[in-house]
Image: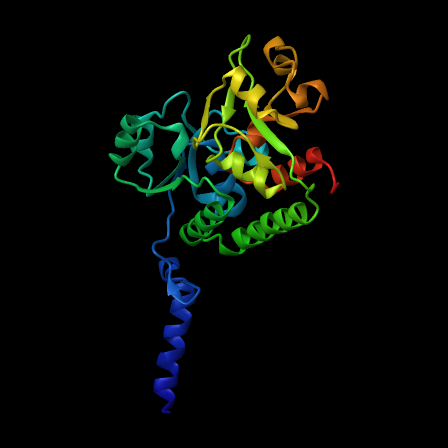
Length: 282
């Protein structure tokens, strides 16, 4: 090969590494696009972006984003109860992240109207969540960090399922209400699949989110364990549930809402905590 040809090939190789991040190769394929102005409109996606993406490109978040706190506090707030679309437009984001459960169709129309590309977390199973994490990694130059996180999720699930009770314990996930109006996670929801990952068997109505709880339904399901979002005192004190096995045995465990309910950066820790609550193999 002529010396000039070798120099030309070397120049191309160097340019492929440093002349434009948009041509970075991921798994043998060109990265879809490299994003430099990222806005996150849900706490879970902010967690993922800060810990497993390229944090310096996160230029907007919600007021509820509090983990990791020291990083989140550095990012401007662009949404409280609802997004501030004027502020978002002034940022001119090229990518917007959000959790599908937090926004209705009207909100989504407004988000799309910004003209930014979208990354939406919508997974209702751990496996689908992992798939979406890999997609996010390819968008935010976070492939290595995402891969490490996925490894921890898979390890937590494998460990929990290898040490599951036999038969599996029946588990209800409740969101205590003010007074006696509680909600229960549907069996098609992401949090229900976390129960499966942790070695339990979720009980609840067939739904992909939390729905209003019928006390009669829970009595009929008679779960061995109840996991509550936040403190569980309101559930323990509800006389209508007094005959439920978990209530009688005082097997009601509260998990911080910001950990249990977010499809974010602590899924491995939730699986570990749930498995610990279920107890070791019987």
